[in-house]
Image: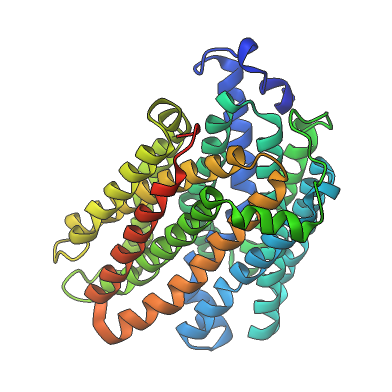
Length: 403
């Protein structure tokens, strides 16, 4: 398979964006992203089965499944701080190999406490690989090429939302819960193999030597208004996404929509348009700028909110499609901005962004969950709208030569 760095050539030797080399590179980057975070989303598809298996409440099982975000937020920050001292290729490779261990052990987890601990361990490994890969892309891509590379990576992330859930539901239904986790452990090892054959140890285009201490690097990034705003945008994006796609399930299964569990599984196809559109986020950002791209994406997401308040299924599904397309497109643009706006210590910047991103998901689960309980679905949608509005306001600070 073609060496990924060999496909990331300087601007003067770049091929057309539609050339086989660039397409092949995008496929490799997307596959690595898919195999890195597929475990994060897949387990959500079998929540009802896990709830029955452990004999706990849906709320308790939901917390256990989403506990991986704790590990991801922590690992994203820690690995980001120390990434200048970590060999990119070796770090990504080991993270994916180690990820297979807690994934396979989930098949025999004796109780909810063990299950929760293993999910946190999964989060640690996933975020380590995720953070190091983002840093790798930022260091090996030219400014012209980086947008497409980051978009390809986020597209793989989006695809894992859809395909991971479908695979998990199918395997668990056909072979049982245990085989579901063994199957995903095999996917983790496949990701490690892909990294081994595609990412070679080469000298990065941008120096990855840590300038100053990790704490000083983190402080410097937080003092940078543009980066600080990008971190906040990431927080708001997952806050809104989690709030939408967690609590809309309760709306879909109760009157007047009243979807069965089988039909609820088919709802995952609302992510399909996002898989196709997110890949173009980098190109759009390079043509019209980062700020207009994020503003446009947030506007698309916002258009979906009133549709999700409808009593008609077609309207609700259309709203979910717009929400998915908008939030993932905005995330791809924001992620690419962080990778290029950080003049130095890019690994630290990527780690901070991911920590804020996943902390946003945690906050969205808690805050919007309270909104949903006390004010219903309408209150939850209003909370999502406020989060998107906050992201839009912070986007104003991204003005630079990257916009």
